[in-house]
Length: 108
Length: 367
Image 1 (cartoon, rainbow over the protein chains, first blue to last red):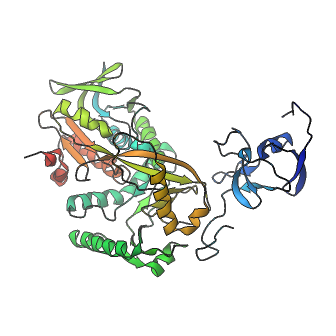
Image 2 (spheres, rainbow over the protein chains, first blue to last red):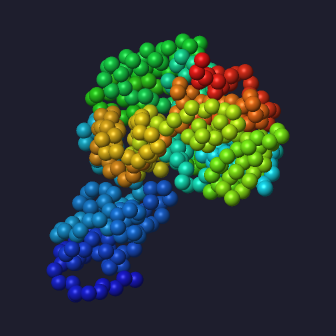
Image 3 (cartoon, rainbow over the protein chains, first blue to last red):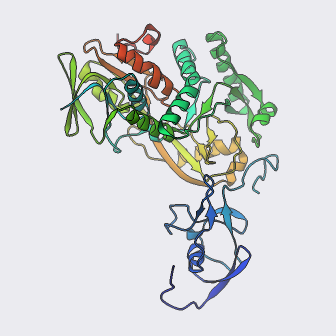
């Protein structure tokens, strides 16, 4: 669906998407790397459970949410790839809540 | 020229509800709306159906609020069925969280006063930190406790607004949009409204134009001293459900977003946002629920409440121009059932009953 244009991929970092290693050109965002890899959906919505993927590519639509290094609801289009980054799909709502601990650190 | 039985000026929460009710009474009704340039309190709403604390020192307002809240299940069901949507209403009670013991003791006094004044009709419980923790998990150490009332609830205000408009159209109501009403001319027991490119001739009119009621009222002999009071709201990313019931300052929607709000600012007709106020709202929310500090805020907005000098609604009929009614209220969600069921009936009958006499515009007259 997407074709890389311009300079060939030179300087790449390794990121892990859902356990799979992906070579990602340094300076690109997580969203553009996922799209270039043909990964069109990166989350499911909290309301209907439908799959969604990067759309606006400029930080306003919140369709490209992923879990990065354990932090939920990260905007893939606003995050540059880094060496060793662990990226996972965001399934539904982020799990932040008071239930696990008394009050200090409820982030799951 | 557009002829009708009743013209409602204002398609916000108040006007839409009244038009919805008038159309149900078989009145040929035209709903006139200024368009999206309007200050839309209806679109900035927090979504509480709130009873606790309202009407202290004014029994008429306490009982109006109570009656409205009690009719919310009916409204929710009716609008939901007519418009084919779920407006997210639930009534499992609500909490006013008190930070510090001073807030807690002030709140206790206020709640007690309301219960005494309503002769026990108002039900509530003051819960200390431990007891409140049973209802609301993850409370911060600054929380001294809170007042819980089983009478409170919440709903999705945007779905309610959409539902009322859809329901109005299903009941054969006509909407005139992008049509700011510039003037109203009473003539021979009827009214000509100069609305955008159209002239509307109506047997009855209802001014429900929010802040613009102050400007339009005098055309039909009504002095309506409403003024803007800004409130700002912060909205978080959608989170797993953790708040089973709403609080005055923080509520979680059915979909998972957390709304934080309740600022009261005197800034004229400025519906923007200000970082210091947003910071204060966030501070209060995270003192109550410290784990919210880890949530991301994704949206914020300001909106203008339609305030009256004593904070109570205005319902009246013009004495010099009978047939011209007005409705101004800042609690458009809580009072929606009054606006959808009761007011339309009174307007159709042509007279407001004595029980709403306390809400007449005459109470603001300078003697």
